[in-house]
Length: 114
Image (cartoon, rainbow, N blue to C red; front, side, top):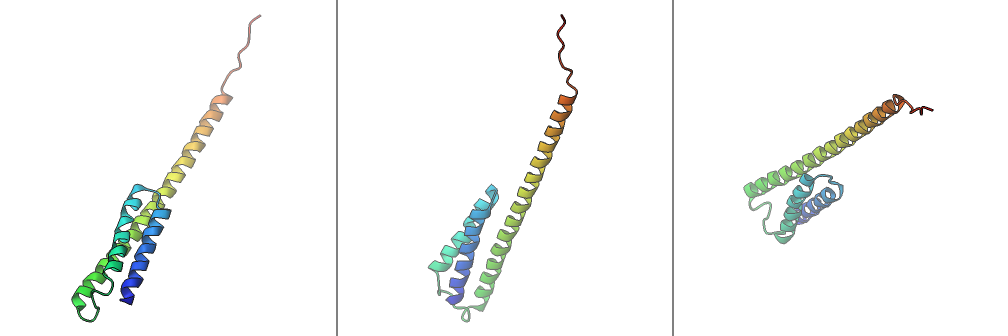
């Protein structure tokens, strides 16, 4: 029972972290998975004793580890994508500033004929 409460708190924390720090739609969508898993852990707290059903407990542990690893990989991909997007924007701004500067240097001032 204590382990179920601890895993529910961990998954609730993961879901909150994904909602707060996520920058793309994928991380927001995946945040529902640990949130629902946390609610399910709280609802079924103590229903499955670890010693009575060792095979089911092992399967449940594998599922918990899988959800945790998938969520952490999604957040890592989200962070990498945000960093790449920021770099592309910086490069684009630098290129447009250089193009604008080069264009202004090549402009011939208008002379009026008298």
